Amino acid sequence: MIRQFTVLSFDGLETSVMRTAPAPEPARGQVVLAMEHVAVTFVDALTARGGYQVKPPLPFVPGTSGVGRVVEVGERVGWATVGDRLAVQAPQGLLAEQVAVSDEMAVRVPGGLSGATIAASIEGWATSYFALERRAVIAPGQTVLVLGAGGGVGTAAVNIAADAQARVIAAASTPDKRNAAAWHGASHVVDSADLTAQVRALAPGGVDIVLDPVGGEQGLQALKLLARWGRYCVLGFASGDIPRLGANRILIDNHTVVGVDYGDASRGDAALARDVLEQVLDGFAAGRYRARTPTAMPFAQAVLAFERAAKGASSARTVLSFPGNDSDLRDIAPPAEM
Image (tube, rainbow, N blue to C red; front, side):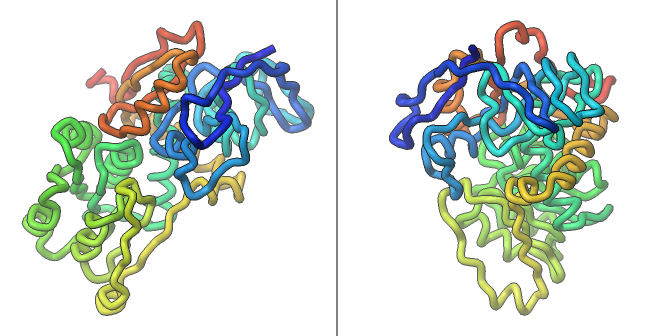
């Protein structure tokens, strides 16, 4: 038998429980993983409270990004073997001691990388890679404005844009979050409370790309900061306010509004999801991407981890770690900075 963290109701996380269930068996094309670390993000917390656009049917086991070891391999899986450490993305269901997943959803973790840091980073880096490289088609020398630049998606976007040789302006609300954005490669950091004035001083002609997971008033201000032919990427509404973008400005300045829902795109295209995950892991292995050590909490403290993620007050990511994996906690950065 195994333990699963299960959400029973959208009325509050305190109703969630640890349930026991039979250990999974792999179907054809699946592997069974003994989970080591599973990320708990702001979106995970929002989903568990019923506040996200997509509501899973109750009861459900949350957890969409993690790292685990292969303990059993199903038929027609030719590349994975018992003992392999895999990074995995799933619609839900990873917060369990063992899970059966399609081999199309998993990729080997390169040797030497922290499993905890990879688990905590998969969602942010995959989403931002998809946004910048596939949807906005970033190019060297362009200027990118990242809103919410101290959060999980924001720091990843800063890192990926900097690696693409863009000039990155990172907007965040606190010194801690601005410091996080700077460590991830921002060219300039600004206070989101004074967004318009500071960005105009840095980019009088406007920015080429806005990456916006925040929405609300910040999103409306950011649209006005776009240069002609600029791309405005909509990733979410962490502010809780969905902005009404002015179609007249979009028309006059030949702007492009780009919707970015990586979760939906990856669920509908396994090849895309696998390719993006491979690109992200290759970037970390090559030292081009970097990520801070997450805050690790024991699996038994799942409710507390979700409550922490829901607050979004810190730039530190959160993972739930399963017994025996406490030592796998460290930054991923170029060797000279380790």
